[in-house]
Structure formats: C-alpha cells, structure tokens
Length: 229
Ligand code: IPE
Ligand code: MG
Image 1 (spheres, protein in one colour):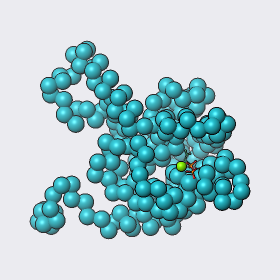
Image 2: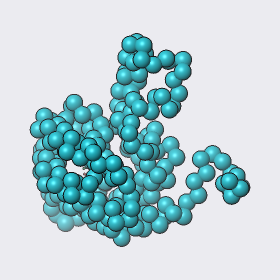
Image 3: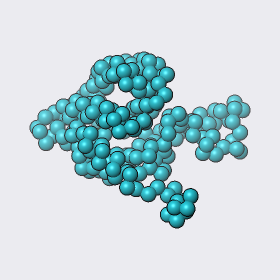
Image 4: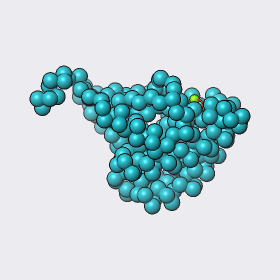
C-alpha cells in the first residue's frame, strides 16, 4: 500500500491525511475482495524499516492503526473475516498488541476469509526468526535437522497457516517488493500500478485481477507440459 505521502503532498496536505485516506482505501479493498471472491488478502501496513520514519509520523500511524482496529473489528466479525498478524508482534506498542490479540481471538473461528496485516514485518527478520525457532526445535529434539525441507520449514514462518500469494499488487509506480513476503512470493504474479494507494478503488482491483488472469503460471515447467496436463 504505497503512495499515501505523495497523495497528500499533491494536495498540500499533511502526510497523515494521506494515511487516513489510505485507511479508507483498505475498507474499500476488503469489500471488493469479498465481492470478487478473493479469500485471502495480506496488507503491507508497516515494515520493520518504517520505524526509521520521523517519530510523529510513526506515532500518527500507530494511532490510526489503533482506531482502525477498534472501528473495523465489528465489520470483520460481520463479514466473517479472520484477522492474522504477520510480523514481529512483540515489538509493537502494547495497546496495539492488545487490540490485535482481541481481534485475532474474536475472529479465530472464521475459516473462509483471512485478512493478514503485515505489521512490523520484514522478510529478512521473518527468516531470522524462523531459523532461530528451527534451531530451538532441533535442540529440543522436536525436529530432525537432517530431514528439514521447505515443507517442514514453512510452519516456522509468520504466514504458517496462510497460502502463498497468487498475486501481489504494488501501488504508486514503484517497481520493487521492499522486503515483503520474499519467500512466499517465489511464484507470485506481480501487478504494478501508478495509482497512489488512497485512490485505489474496486476498479483498480478488478484491473489487477484481469491482469492476473492473463498470466500463464508455469512453475518452472514448459507451456506444452501445462497444455498436456
Ligand atoms: C504508505 O505510503 C505506506 C505506509 C508505510 C503506511 P507512504 O507513506 O510510503 O507514501 P509515499 O511513498 O511517501 O508516497
Ligand atoms: Mg512509500
């Protein structure tokens, strides 16, 4: 979800106004996802690198998140969407942790739709956390390191119970992944759009899905193999 700051700057507004409008785009996107039958969606809301922003912007983002969680919990319950935090949870402010805990618990039983919130997320941090957990499990005799493969490694990632993304949408005209789901995106299709996140609408979402539908996913195979299968 990129481009909130530029959206605000174009209008001579403070950056936080862009973030506020970004939160509205999140609400639109969640209802569009259900309309289009997209069952799992993960929003990159705050990266481990975002702590390096000016303190007042970080504080404003956290209070926006706090309010968003408070306002949207009834909506998640109404829409039967399970909330899952993807990121290093323990380093988030305590009030946010409490709200997230509450939202995860209140929505834990929903098994059709999942909203992942990538918060204090970075792929490199995720891999390091996973490797540490693997080492501990090996030391405790729970796993056999010699038998470790990607299938047995996968449950140590933050996304343990979520499918890999089929499609990644990056807004605001930037062409990079910025430390987002680097392992999980190994075979993801990527859609780039110049649209700034606060302007992202149902129409932009539909365009991204159409673009996705036009791709041929070969997973290392040849076109002919796919046609014969
Ligand atoms: C939102 O957009 C992303 C968040 C970290 C919430 P930005 O704040 O990165 O917007 P730009 O890149 O400055 O336009
Ligand atoms: Mg940005």
